[in-house]
Structure formats: C-alpha cells, structure tokens
Image 1: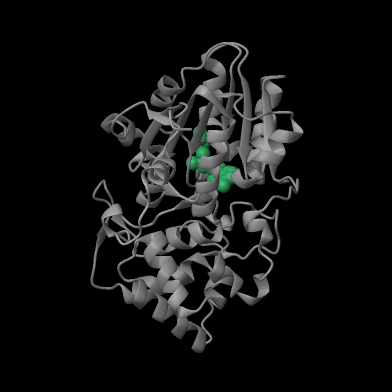
Image 2 (image 1 turned 180 degrees about the vertical axis):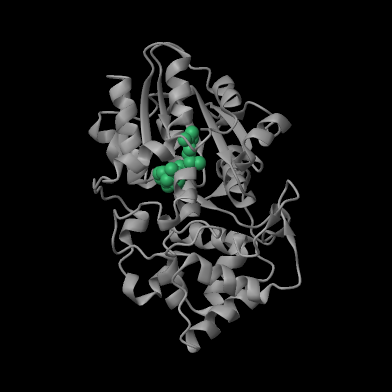
Length: 372
Ligand SMILES: C[S@@+](CC[C@H](N)C(=O)[O-])C[C@H]1O[C@@H](n2cnc3c(N)ncnc32)[C@H](O)[C@@H]1O
C-alpha cells in the first residue's frame, strides 16, 4: 500500500508514514475534549485486567490511550503502577495529560504512533525487556467517530479527513486527497483488502466517474451517497442485525489506508515483543478480521521476514524449499497464548456498549523460544 501512496503526486514524501519524527502540536479545544472523553466506553475491561494481572509497582504501556478508559482501570487496579500511554491523536494526548495530573508521577503521556514508540521510550530511558504488560485496543475511539469534523463516520456529515494524527502532519493525505488522486486499480485493492468490500469494482468505477463529471468527493455525505447510489440492491446488516450504511466498509477501508494501520500494527507487535519482559503480558483487542489476522500470525509465529504473509498457508508456494532450521526460525514465536481461543464480549456488555460487538481479545505471555 506504501507503493500506492507514492503514486499520489502531492504525497511522494511519505517518510512520516513509516519512520520516526515527533511533532508535539497539541489540540486546542480542551473544552470539547472533556465532553467527548465521557463518550468512549472501554471494551472488555474486566477481561483485559484479568489477563494483565497488574501488581503494585509494575510498569505497563497502553499503546492506544483513546479516552483513557482502560488506562484508568489499570491505574486503579494496584498501587504505584507506572503507565506509559501512547496515542497518535492530539485529542487523546490532551486527555492523557489530564490523567497524568490526577495520578502524579504514575502516568507518562506520549504523543505518537506505534512506529514512533521506540524513540519516545528511549527519551524516557526505557530499555527492551523491561515492561510488565502491554495493551492494544485497536481502531478508532468514540471521539474520532463521533466528531463530524474528523470525517470518520458515514452518519455524520463532515470533511472527508480520517487522519488519526489530526493536524500533526499537514502533508499527510486525507481520505478526500486519496479519492481525488488514486487510480482505479489501486482503489479496488484498497476497498477489497482493507474493507473486504465485495462491490469494490463498482464503487471504484463510480469514484472515477465522479471525477470526470467534476463531482467533488469532499464530504462524508458525498461519499456515502455515491456508494449508496451504486449498491442499491442490497440491504446490509451488522452482527446485531441492524441495518448499516452501504458505505461502511468503504469508510473502513479508507481509514485503514489513510492511517497506514496495517503496517503500524505489524510494527507495533514487533515493538511490543521487544519491550516486554519475559513473563510480561500482551493483550490485544481487534475489531475486524484483518487486524485479528495480523495479531494471530505474530502470536503463532507465522511472520516471514517481519512481513505478514497475507495468504492462508495452504496457498503458499510449495516449490520453495526450507530446511528444518530455516522453518524453525521462520515459525518460532516468543509468545505463549493465555487462551486457546479468542475471547469476545458478553451479551450484556454488547447490549450496553454495541460498539464492542465485533471485539476479539487475544492475550499472550512473552516466553523465550527454546530454538532462539
Ligand atoms: C479504540 S481507541 C482506544 C480506546 C481506549 N482503550 C479507551 O478506553 O478509551 C483506539 C485509539 O488508538 C489510537 N491509535 C490507533 N492506531 C494507532 C497507532 N498506530 N499509534 C498510536 N495510536 C494509535 C487511536 O488514535 C485511538 O485513539
């Protein structure tokens, strides 16, 4: 997908997508933040705590601080917890700074992406193999979804932005920029791979035609209406059998692309493994199958050359020959699963917090593989 971005002329310099560089512009609308942080209900918080088992004096990283729901519960679960809280969104960073005021000396707010974390941790003197527990609660926060100006939601009319980093990197393409420049073949790929959208070809064609008719796609409702106009025959339902907008998958795909989420998660899993102690706990909450697949492949050791192998194993090239040692080194995993299967939220939790309906929790302990 990085190759696709390079083709978008205005954004040839996309180093910030995959490399480090810290900008610390903070969000100015603090009064808006207070109202919003109440809106994000943390998902499967009891299960998260059961897996992390925080003890007095331990050190944790919340990789996806959001509104701080999980962080707060971790801090309350045992005395003297030290918590590094990361988020790429300046709105979350402002909330994290307020949490730090409430828990003096215990919370270290960090503004950045998973890919920026090693630099941020280094500046705090944190070494590899020194952290007791790490949490990823992936996807968007309610503050991102519910604020129309952020452009994440098909049901809230606003500019087609979708950048989780807010204004930290002004050159970073918005969803509208991608739709204005991407070519048809690449757009089909984005919609298929990141949105699992069956109508990807139809939608991509409509986006191209919109360009020729000088129809702008600059707002969420313009894109939503366009997708609805080509997906007329089908009613789409979510896991709770509620009707969903036909552009929901298109929005998911664009969001994942704009925020480089797949590469970020892949890298984040590598970083987590490096910073956890042996015996340290990892907990991940994922919300769609692409994310879950990446986590699972890391935990099971199906990661080749640090890249996620996108094919099910049965489709891989059988003519490639690896000797025993090579196979062991490719497939080794420094993780021991805490549960054999994924955990999902209870029916009661889903009824009070429908946003968690597609959550999958995986947890693992860092171990040292005997072949390493
Ligand atoms: C679902 S929310 C987390 C909610 C949080 N657990 C709570 O209880 O409030 C996910 C957060 O992760 C952040 N995020 C997603 N990808 C990230 C990345 N690559 N680096 C840093 N933060 C990221 C988003 O900005 C968002 O605020």
